[in-house]
Length: 324
Figure 1: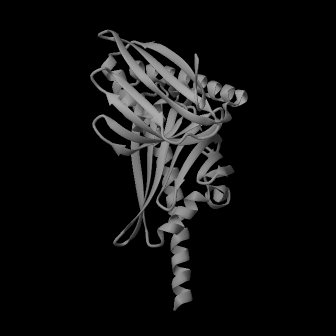
Figure 2: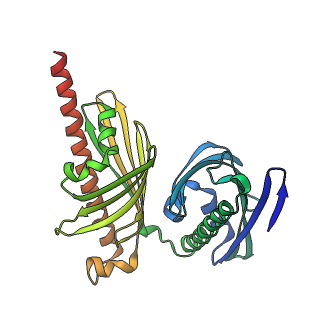
Figure 3: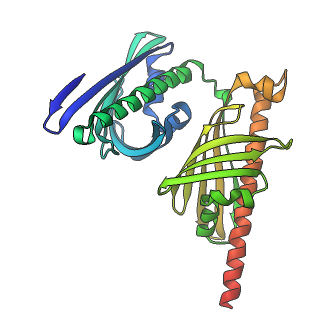
């Protein structure tokens, strides 16, 4: 569907899916954007810039046709009619403008239809840009609706694991941040990293491919997108996860306190239950998988933080010696 305005052609799309879950539960998943990175494959990171009862501004980073795009959107939440309208404030090229609406329609007490509407304009009304945007909207909408159905119908709270570890550093927050930010050097700095490939085509948006050594000496490959907020926070999402996980998001946070710097590594993981027997052996349970994942991720994150601590404290000692 298409209509013409003074600014060019407005293109419209609609995607829909039927979900075997209550409409209120589905609406709650759409409304809470902090859950989107682990639910929706395209979403890397989402946060609130402003939040009210029905009006809010959200910041999003998401993949589109293999590229990471970011924008801020205004949303209106109509909780009575189960609708969420959204409009990008400033769109990223090739998008000139983008908006739409989630329409959540109860078909029965346990059955819901979700319609996802988009309207958009392309920069310069270029047909190639229109085609690029339409491909991205189609791909992401189909992926998001399928993931929304999976989360609403099948997600077991026992499969979701969130935890964090902390390390205290007597050094500068900037040095700790720089160590974690400069992941391109991790293969030479961290024993558990066998290979690293880092790209940063857009400042503070990194794609990181990494081979990690496991306890038995083998390696597994992960691919992550990292969003960096100097000099306090780096958030990431794994686009390619180890076999035992269907989703993995994380956050590095560096905060100053009265005694120095506190570094926190936080993880949220969704366990893939069908992979448990092949990874942990027949008879292994979800509880076993939670313990295994908690131990493996916690060890590697703590090792990284301890190496960042040593780096920052060496720099602090060298600075003190130079000043004396």
